[in-house]
Image 1 (tube, rainbow, N blue to C red):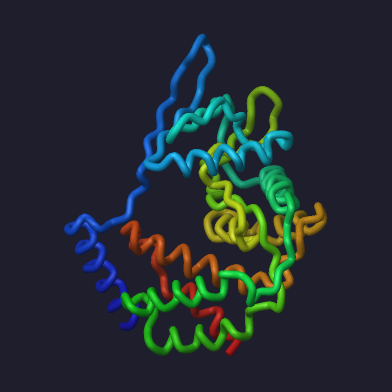
Image 2: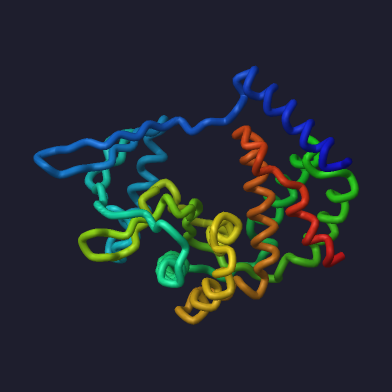
Length: 266
């Protein structure tokens, strides 16, 4: 009964957001252009600051060759090389190992071990959970339990640094030229992140039975040890992701039941 109520409430709120024009949408445009036989991906954003941030992040990883090469950044535009290749058609051990190697490169780029209380992540988690309770996604009981659980899950220190925030399979390309795996959604590079959040999204979206292999390989390759407090990272991701899905009107992805497993720690 509770899940049915949440479902119908979510539907009504989604309709309200759409009718009022409050549904959040990315302010960007994407085009593919050809100049003297060379193809490029052209991204236009609402703010030049976004373009500059992407430019800076691409320059940080230029030598690692895991993202398309930056062609230019001009005001609110970013141009990057178009990579000829194929998206992974299915999840295989090879793909999982390649994505683990990709994330190891991301996570070993200047990570910092920081006192958790000196970061913004506990406050952001509290804010996200509070919002989900306010709009009816989390019941009074579930919200109260999660508040207690957070105190148990939060580690003394966390690894912060770069992350790749949108690791859905369609955002990876296997290059025809060299067989390397590239992440083509350059907006997904982010600094000052709670390391591990990106892998959590991959786990939710497509890792499935390959999840143990992925995290084992990640550790073997030398990624920072966020796995010792992975449930905290997972809860931070789930709260943020669910709130975003709410604002984007993706009601099918809103599932309060995903939070219940954390309450078994109470």
